Image (cartoon, rainbow, N blue to C red; front, side):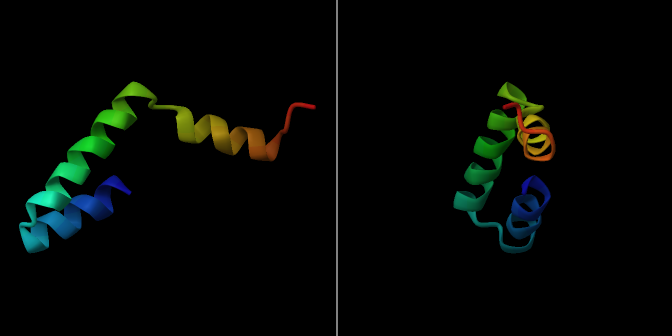
Length: 47
């Protein structure tokens, strides 16, 4: 998602897209393995 957002910003120069990119980047720094844990739970649900 980050790469897509940056790509859109770099092609358009839209400041709102840049701000979205920075917000997503900040969220990923706070919980870097969130997506991995969610995927792991889908593969191996804890009963």
